[in-house]
Length: 307
Image (cartoon, rainbow, N blue to C red; front, side, top):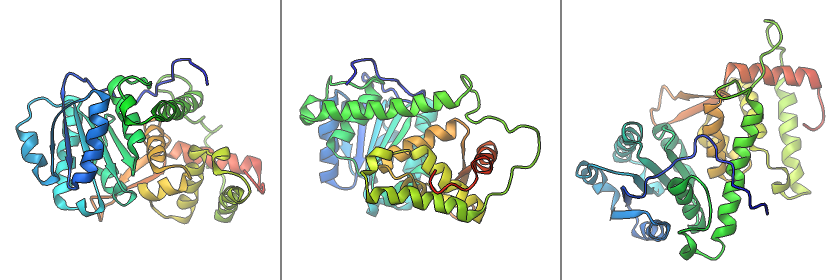
């Protein structure tokens, strides 16, 4: 594997290790796993507390560099909403890095509340994935330093994460016309985008999923395109897609899918919409320019068996 410096996405979080870190979680066993990763990474962990003591502890903490949440399904309570709002405000106002480890069942709640760029959601991570997220937060460049005690395979796992994040950055950089530029090309003229039949998009999605019957899914991992297809299908059918469903459609680990969703939203490809009936849920849809580009793409390629 190349020893070149990994490419950093513009949204990579950075944590100042001189500032204190706090860990919150209802389950003592899950907290213990996170404590191992935090201690090994070099983070200055000053307290590890149950979730119901989190808000009071934050009130007494004037400076905070990192807040880590270890959550389970049982934590989906109004108290969690209040805590997430508080932590997101700390991220916005003070640049506090917030990392939440949770099952997929809580992804919609977390995605609706943790919206700042210095927040990250990990879905059912193992110790190496926790260490990898901390490595990004601590240094912004992944490597072996400071996390060797977590497991012998950390170096490989961190390099994998580096490659993954670098691929996101490089792909979106190619899509963009420059810093801050659009990630899709404007359609020629001002004519309305051509109509696309829902069955055409569904057939493409089915064909892509069928490949996994014959080859390893890792050979064809393309979460950006899979999510674009899923959102186009939903748009045609006039359906709304929550974050958790889009993670499943991406056909990659949910943590990876969440990184893609965040980055593609920042690039202007996706738009987040709050659920008007449930403030704890967020929907994702295609931005108008992305929808236009997808429809023109299908009009140009016709109806292929596989895309």
